Image (cartoon, rainbow, N blue to C red; front, side):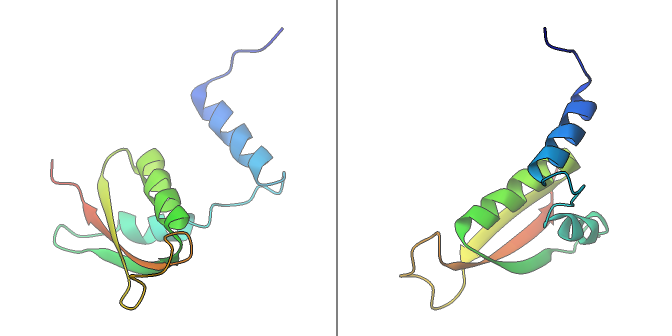
Length: 98
């Protein structure tokens, strides 16, 4: 039979299992640390490789910041004809306007 555990326990265990048991930290954790200190009129920006990373960042922020932020992105100049999985993207993270 299975066990019932809290959602927090499940997320912690899942994170540990996915990191190979190393207790690793997401590649997006340092970005979230920078983002959490954003002022009302400030925007965090960085570049990432591939749209998968953009999606990963968006998901990580949504999961860990509970709707406080909005992530927008665009291909960097010269990347317009590059496949989205290989292109470089500039991401912009704004405080949500609620």
